Length: 190
Image (cartoon, rainbow, N blue to C red; front, side):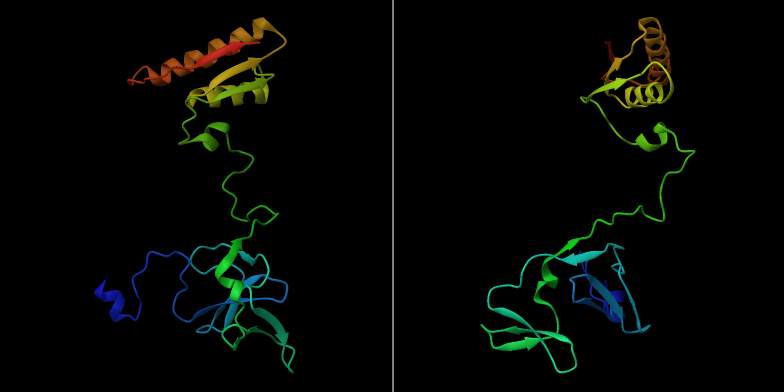
């Protein structure tokens, strides 16, 4: 902690706090961006969290938005009789949920359902899967069952459904027979 103070940094628990030399700003249409005065660059993502934000809602009571002679927007606080170029709504931004997928996608075409569910505990969840005796339906039923879910397999062919159930239960018992496990896989054929 003393090293942080010596370096001019305060110890904080806030992940939204900006590093020294950074400033939070907003565009005319409410998008938040970050200015790095040390490198003289700007970016849309928060320098610590990597999240994008936007301003939501109207100006607080008593505030008004004006434009100066240079075309820059400033804000007037009529209650306290002061002006500022910082949008008072910056304290109440919301996280932007971008429509496009993240460029650093965690999964690709080779990812299995087991990879995606790794670390998930689905105990107590009831899931109905159609076409669970083959293909994607089977892999989904298998993965969810191995993660503790109560799986209801909706299949047209009872013989193939029973074979798929047997394969999943065999794998489940093989995987969990070496551990003391309080639950067990549940299946209902329908």
